[in-house]
Length: 116
Image (cartoon, rainbow, N blue to C red; front, side):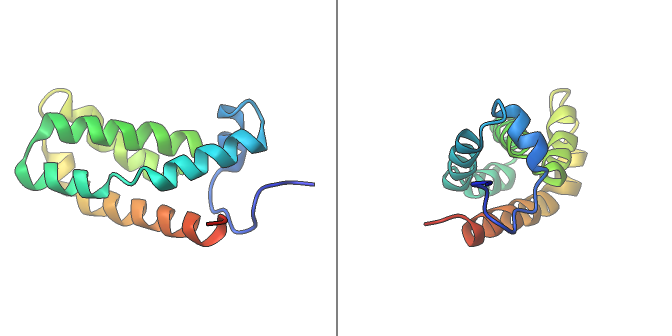
């Protein structure tokens, strides 16, 4: 019997793979993701055009979203982070709002399906 809650709109197979196929570890990682909301810092660094700190935050979102199987969010964060390494700001300018929307969607979904 699976410990995973119903309604997870994630690639749970990928997430479990990153967690040594342990549902208990995966649930812990999902809760860590939910509690480590980086939207405010992303918005602040974006507004300040502090691209280095923004890149570091986007990298954290990219890595953690990949770990839980939030593939859409992972792809957007990757498309933002990689060009920033070479000071190409345009993808961040184009995709920031979409990343925040996807991030919010994932967090809201986790808040709905995970126990408080």
